Length: 242
Image (cartoon, rainbow, N blue to C red):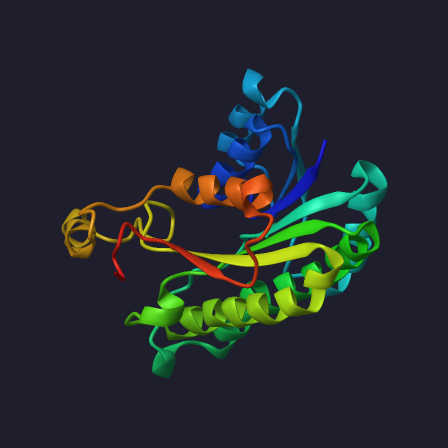
């Protein structure tokens, strides 16, 4: 059974990814600061058949990441896939945003996944195979008022993806990014129904994508269909940026 590490796996997009991969036969190790009720409920479903695991860890503790990866490797064996999904979605105008909030965003959305990937990809390189998926956002390319720092961190994810794909491709490892549009998760729950309808109305398909649409793309990239897809950014936004 191939193991996949999914960060931010206790809710939203991460939980959808964890559930779908477990149902597809992967061994899933979901990581977040705390286990959610939704994750506990998902773990009890028959379709997961014991393939859904949770390990509590604060990815903001960057110095503790190497030891954490070693513990996972010792406990679960080889890690075939890594989904860097965890991140903060803090809003704020740059001119008035607290420096501590800026630093927290950059730490969790950029530094943490880069360092985590470093220690996971080392093992993938030794194993001669692996799949890495970084969750970015359409905000990285479109921009959005009040999300300048968030957009900067997501743009970093796409740049990281393209260059790392070049570094590790010859060793049998693929690296891709997914750029979701506005999806009904914690990040968009502050939007009014009118705002959500307006965003949906701008898309080619006149609707908002769902968390399982992102999960399905992750499953594809980790499966046989994605074996020759690397160094690219796949947009899932119902045609919002078309």
